[in-house]
Amino acid sequence: MDIITNRIVTKHVNIWDPEQLLEMGAPDDEYEMEIERITKKVPRCQDEIEVAEAILMIRLVRIFPLKIVLK
Image (cartoon, rainbow, N blue to C red; front, side):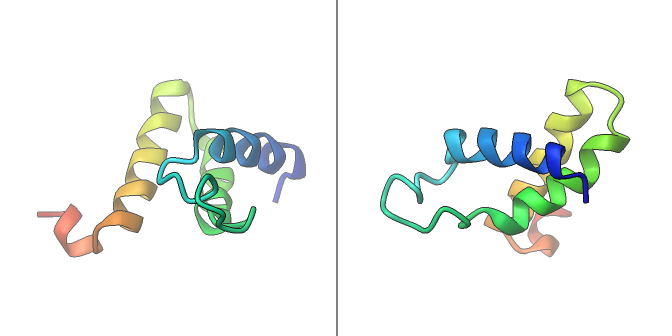
C-alpha cells in the first residue's frame, strides 16, 4: 500500500468524518477499512470524478448492505 496516499486519504476522511463518529469520540482508526479501500482505488482513478465515485460506492456499502445498493 502506498503510505503517502494512505496518509492523505486518512487526513481527508478524518477531517470529513462523514458519520460524525470521530466527533462523538470514536477511535482515530474508525474509518480504517474504508480508508484502505479508497487508498487502493485512488491510483487507478483518472480524475477527481472517479475518486468521488469510488468513495461513494465504498460509503454506500458501509451504510447499506450490498444487495440494497445494487437494486
